[in-house]
Amino acid sequence: MSLRFRLVVLIALALLLSLVLGGAIACLNASRSVQTEMRSALLVGRQTVDNAIREIGGSTDPQRDLQALVASFKGNRHLRVSVVGDASPATVLPVGERMPFGKVPKWFIRLIGVPSETERVSVEMGGLPLGTVIIETDPRNEILEVWNELSGGFVVLALFCVLTIPVIYLVIGGALRPLGRLSAAMAQVGEGDYAIRVGERLTPELARLRDSFNRMASRLAATDADNRRLNEQLLTVQEEERGDIARDLHDEVGPFLFAINVDVAAMSRLVEERRLPELSEPLQSIAEAARHLQRQVRGMLNRLRPIGLAEFGLAEAVDSLVGFWRRRYPEIDYRVEMSEACANLGGLVDTTVYRIVQECLSNAVRHGKPRQVTISVERAGRGDEVLVEVADDGAGMREPPGTGYGLIGMAERVRALGGRLTYSNRPGGGFAVSATLPQSHRLPSPLPEAAR
Image (cartoon, rainbow, N blue to C red; front, top):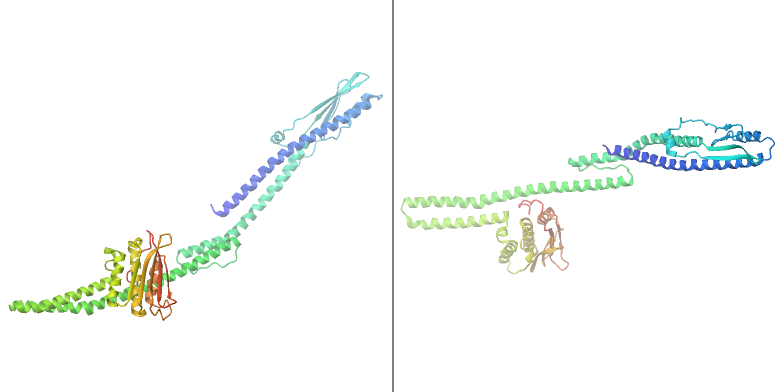
């Protein structure tokens, strides 16, 4: 069932309920009105008879005056008057009225529930009974009048409802039409068309919904563009990484494997010629080549995945990284402050923290020429965030912030986890990087290790 039809049905039910309640109230008021009218008519009739009886007491022809009294009620709408007894009987009935809406139903008469009331007045003359005047109320005309009024009112209300409901149906349809367009626009967004916008003029309530939809579509478009750009960069980085590995294998590993093969062939020849004392030289060459290959493979593995991070934890991996740079730049003062609560943040967060420290240390010692580098990893907020800060007192960044690929890679790593990254030159000299990462059990899927 459509919303439009439901609204029309609800309005129709509300109108019907209003009619029922209005009818009930009208019937209650009508019953009181008819009862009041009957009592008033009976009171007036009794006063009329009493006044006439006093005049009959001195009349020369009381029978004629009594007949004239009964006849005076001719044309009355609510009273049936008759005389019985020694006098000549006579009866005057209420005048019947027209019924434009048909005969009054019996259920309506029972609903009004006003019974007839009777008054008996004895007429005497000279102490002798002359007759009895009977006054009886007849509510039929009053009930008929109420029935005609209520019927007319209900006919008008019924016509009003019949004419109003189609108008309401059309108005609701016009009001809900923008919702249909918004629904179609949302369906397009669901299919990936984030360029759709709703720009028509709407009521204030729907205008807020339209503005919210347009903002959502704009953000989805921006997010989609970021994702596309990030995917392109990831593919580019992956290809560059593969190229670097291929060059390392070709330039470093390949020649040494070839040299090992040559040395093995030489050893085979010396063995066949039984020149065993000369085997020491090719054996030493093979050992040197193997050590070189080990260093090359270890360096390649460290680029692909931080060595020791999974085995020994984040603190050990950061200390190892700091030790690597301390051996090459011993003149720099390295200070590491890592909270015990950050010893095990989970594989994805550990890797991200390590890469941030790795990139910041590399930038500091290679470009900033600092005297001191400070590394801090601690809990932030209410304990559900990790704050990583790396600061140095070097020369700072000379080019505009954010132009370096390393900073862009860090920002994308942090944003992929739902975190925040800020960096800037320090007022007293140097450069500072601050990253806030959410510590959650449900984090997004990790980025490829090539994206750094």
